[in-house]
Image (cartoon, rainbow, N blue to C red):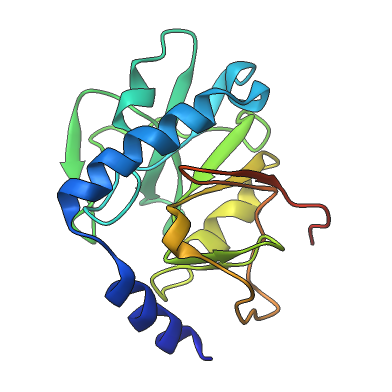
Length: 181
């Protein structure tokens, strides 16, 4: 099955947005049970699109500094910028810090990554732009795919540039990926 076919398959399986919001709460609860989360002081996250796990409840964690993707206009690439209350719409209409303060290469302990589909080896299919495949190598953080059960497949195709996850977290499971590239 091609990546485009998988994207269509997952879209057909997706429940309505009210159900996704309920499932998001279960994913967040499962994720918060991980020592990996509890010990992290700086976490890369994302502002969710309507069909992604809603991470907003995590942002209330007082001991954690969160970063989200933002365009570095000087370098012409996306980097992780400290989450602030002042946000603006970025290039693709996704909110990002109005005045970005970017994370250093070794500053993040963990990066939470959305996706369309994941498999048990940590492979990920995104929206097709290679956004996270260019963003993730900039940081030495642990990578956790955050998704719903219906987005976990037995196997998905991967290309040489695709970045694998170290962990997968859904509403019913936490999977530490044994081998990573």
